[in-house]
Amino acid sequence: MFEIKTYPEFSWSLSRHKTLMHCARQYAHQYYTSHNGWLKDSPEWNKQAYRLKNLTNLEMYFGSVVHDIIEQVIDHYLNTGFIPEETQLTEQVRTLLNKGFIDSTRRYNEWVQRPKKTTMFHEVYYGKTNQLPKDKIEKISHRLNVTMKHFLSCKTMKELAYNENIEFLEAEKFRILEIGKLKVYVVLDLLYKDREHNKWVIVDWKTGKQSEEDPYQLALYVLYLLQAYPISDLNNIVIRNEYLLEGEAVEHQLDQVTLEKVQELIGTSVEWMTDYLEEASENKPLPLEKFPQTSDQQSCHYCNFYELCFSNKKSASALVSLDR
Image (cartoon, rainbow, N blue to C red; front, side, top):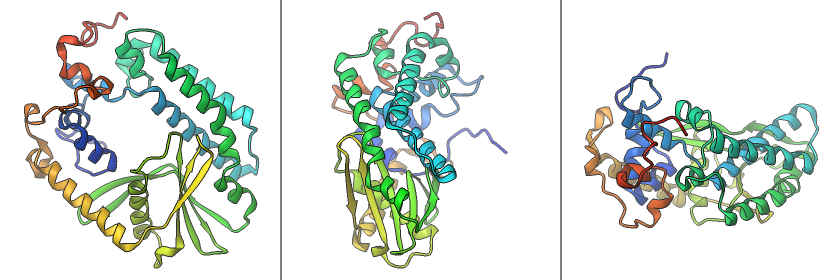
């Protein structure tokens, strides 16, 4: 049964760690101020933080749409053996992009009432315009033109289509990795087993450019795999990033030393997060003023919670009016 709690349950994720590294104030709003903001009787401050938490930007929304469609394609293929044409998939992405734009520009009231069910682009909300930046439109148009072509021709899809010894295991499900008493949340884009070669293959779809942080996320996947499945040899685990923008597959092999370093990172990160708690057993945070803002104020313009930190610059209608 769902239980309303004064404070959220504490858990760790790489995105949570990265948020705290970037800005403690953003971290406070993301994981504490917004808590219970979906409840009708919550204070307006918490409701607004929850709305802002659910803002997305064009790149993130594009990536989410592509991930959802890929999940549907793979599920449909496993059940029917059929893979749609590139043009059909590209049109599906385009349709959902248009829906996100319509939500953002014409359904403000719906977003205020149901921010998790209605899309609002950061570029529209803070730009206070019904137009998207031209450079972003060009960027997403390019990604739209190449992503599905690269997906259909990627190494992973070839293996799924032509290797009869593939055993599908998981896709796009929230999983919990337990490290001691700590819950660590991971989401595997795709997991399958090559029975012929006794290989466990973890796939992570990427719609943006390659990042130095990508292997850290993959290490969490490996830790989860070792805990959830009977695997004794790390050499039997293949970790693959499918970069759909470039059409390139990059595989990694992690050793025990790397996994231990990631676990050490988690431990250090949790200690840092605990420093911002007034009562650790309840996950009760310190007062908001104890969470300092980043010194890089240029990056504040890209933060979902910009108006909570710079109240003199926020939209007059953002907190009280629904007539937009």
